[in-house]
Image (spheres, rainbow, N blue to C red):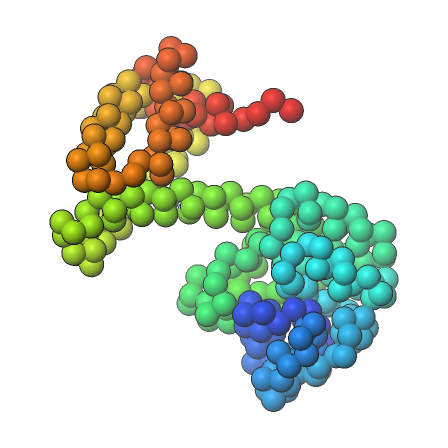
Amino acid sequence: MGHDSEQISVLGLGAMGTAIARAWLAAGYQTTVWNRTASRAEPLVAEGAKAAATAAEAVAASDLVIVCLLDDASVGEALADAGLAGKDLVNITTGTPGDARERAEWAAGRGARYLDGGIMAVPPMIGVPESGAYVFYSGSPELFAERRVALSIPAAAKYIGEDAGSAALHDVALLSAMTGMFAGIAHAFALTRGAMSPKEFAPPLIEWLTAMAGGADEMAAHLETGDYTLGVTSDLAMMVQGNRTLLRTAEEQGVGTELLTPFMALMERRLADGHPDEGTAGVVDLLLREP
């Protein structure tokens, strides 16, 4: 069933923008697309999209405008001449919470409602309901309520509040945790390199990390209550002692320790401050800089 009344414009046809535009086309939405390099639009035009010659023309074509560009500066540049009054602007360009808040004010000043989005997926997951893809949205609650059906087509839509920076903060916090996890995975593979098959080592590694991920609940409870000793089974004194074995083993295996030592140094600092019975939640306090 077509959505003749539903017109959507997508600005930015990198891998993600293309996947998102394709999902709306497949669902029968009238989709206008624009990209700085115009040839990127050709495959989508062949599938029924309309190509706009300029970003301003793409904005004019629809009341719902999705922006998926390289960075925040590109958004300002692309939309510099666009008439945004009365438009619903949904910015899913990756940026910081500060970028999002500034862009929300900028959009409001030009008469547009604004939502910022953080995409928790890679392009092949878009438009595939069972993939688990979702997008965090924050900003105008009215815009989200009215456009929820359309926004849910490329990926599940999770609204997390009126502060436009909230989606980016969720996105970056999760990606930062992932980065730390990948650092640990890289170190583990380096330790076992040559001693065992990486393919054989991967299943127990995944099983262990999956089991350990529950530690986030314990840390959350510590941070919420302020009691960092609550239910601790491996305390800081024990872990700092254990870290020495991790470092000695790396040395024996001829593996660099630079992925581990920053975290270990913070643990040592917290222990030296007199907190042997805690878990690792105190490291969070050490990371917080005075405003």
